[in-house]
Image 1 (cartoon, rainbow, N blue to C red):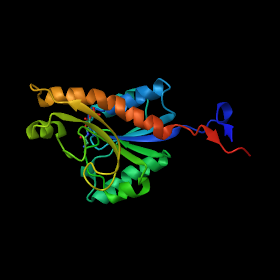
Image 2: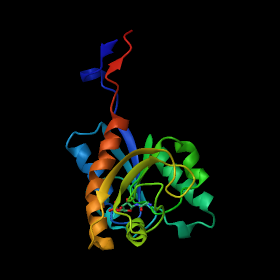
Image 3: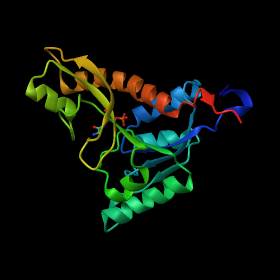
Length: 206
Ligand code: GAR
């Protein structure tokens, strides 16, 4: 075995990021890459929402972006085929759902099974779906947080990779709790991706 470094370094892992709105988790990934913390590149950003703030930001940063609206397709499978075509045309190796607010169907999942991760603002399996932070407040939990997991066909479901807890404070609102959880998301997601994308330390010698 010989150490992998210098010219032997494998190519960067190509990420495809799916978003629906603000895109702050996408920005956290982008900044981690810029800071040299992640052996990855953002090959493409796709939003199902053409008005997405994150999509504008990504475009301004010079990233390859596409808006693919669900309403342009009669069937979910056709919509997901359009997404897959873009991911594949950019040779995406791992797909990151960074605030992508749709249930992933099998058309999109099959080619990226075990190569698709999602970030969710609760300690799964508690509070999947929309408004996880409001669900946590309604339930009255004293600790919530965020999870990064492999994606399966269920809502915010699949094997959990990493979680971090955030205390719920007595006077928390949905906004204040979301704000504190989001700060943790911005650390947790890049940390997981850094491990996923890290090149092997050793490669077999010839
Ligand atoms: C984040 O809090 C993310 O965890 C959540 O949407 C927000 C997107 O924010 N995702 C889900 O709820 C998935 N079920 P962002 O667009 O600023 O990254």
